[in-house]
Length: 218
Image (cartoon, rainbow, N blue to C red; front, top):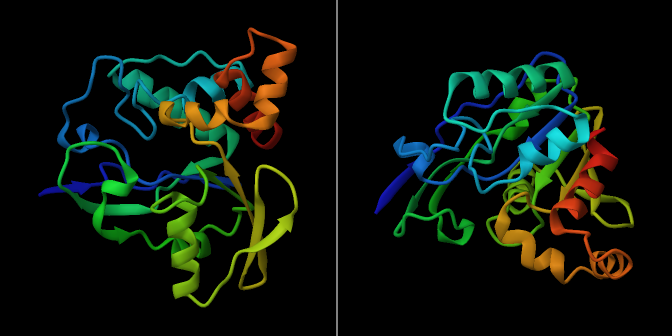
């Protein structure tokens, strides 16, 4: 059994307004056996599209390499844009050395409620994925429930937009399509994607992500 410990502490710059929430990076980020094109930071997998999506939206020129420069670029960008990253899972156990959310066992969650209380400027949470089992939203709902809080619908549209009240603050949550390559199949089945693809044969699953993310990040 492999103890999968999250390799990074939460990155929450001063005056953070938007918070990205995922689960945990792939196991190789915890063991230090990164690929040459990985970046040793949150969402640094060469197979993950988050930084390429943000680069497209904000016209940034990120490096994609296992270097300190690549890490520093991302931290400077997040600080400038008042965006934080704090995954839900602090640690878990795995029988197989893969990044499957369903493969996580004996999961220890981070105390997101306490983190939100310490960062009163946060207005919006982005879940990197839907509400399937062991997803970021799935864990966050459980975390809220343990604190006697509840996520309520805020807007009846897609992606799902909910909200909850923390003390006197109203915090909005938005469930975005996962930036991982594994989500390409679900995007391919999306009716809106199919319609846009029909109108433009060169339209890709990456273009679809950029279109959705831009609406809420920019």
